[in-house]
Image 1 (tube, rainbow, N blue to C red):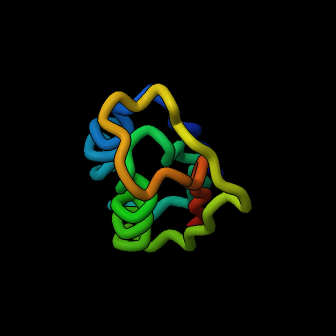
Image 2 (cartoon, rainbow, N blue to C red):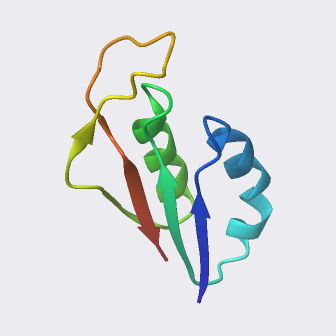
Length: 85
């Protein structure tokens, strides 16, 4: 099984777009993806992974990314999501 851990300081969407062809292949994957850099990361990446056939589960707790200079609600964000296929 392949495993990807993606934490690239806010450029996760670029990495995920680059992975599209790999994910289309249907191979078994586990993904750990940071979702706290931007306020809509959790929702955006959950939909993206589900579209590629992943079962997605968010981390249990919440966090505040006080380094986000453009921070707006929701202030409490999930730290990461896990996907498995």
